[in-house]
Length: 197
Image (cartoon, rainbow, N blue to C red; front, side):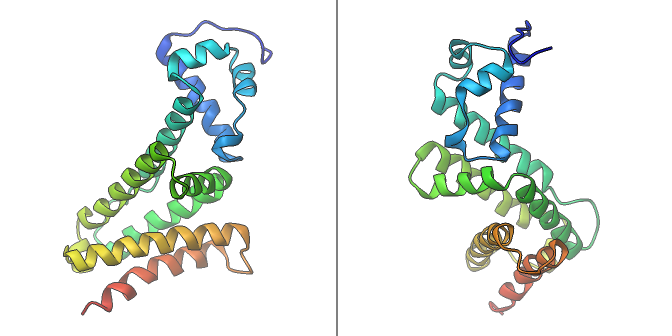
């Protein structure tokens, strides 16, 4: 089947197909650089049909970003187990792998959120809030973190540190391995929390 061949799909299937294409393009480029014409050609749909599902180019971009944020939250969920550091390490390793696989798109999300795009900022802040809350809600983590305003402040700062460190490493690894990177960002949290004692 060629890219221009049109295939009839149910509305939910078509929407999922377009989001999947958007995510694939998002992984390797900034959200602003996703070509609607290319997407329509690959998806075998008209621009009008794309706008029927998403309202506008901006609506489509925000839907792709929301799906990317949902995928990030799902992929970084801590595994079962009793050791909070092992759970944290597994979750952060999954985060590192996600950013590596979606580097350009993830960077564009962070920059768009910082640059004043309110819709993107809301998605970004919601995803960050979910991940912070999840850090405190993970069974067994109370041996590492006591949920206080001061600890939440430290965890929020740590999340920003993790994000910046991983994005910087993706640009210039400078001999630091993926496993070393995951260990650095994991070990930083208990070290920061220890300053509160």
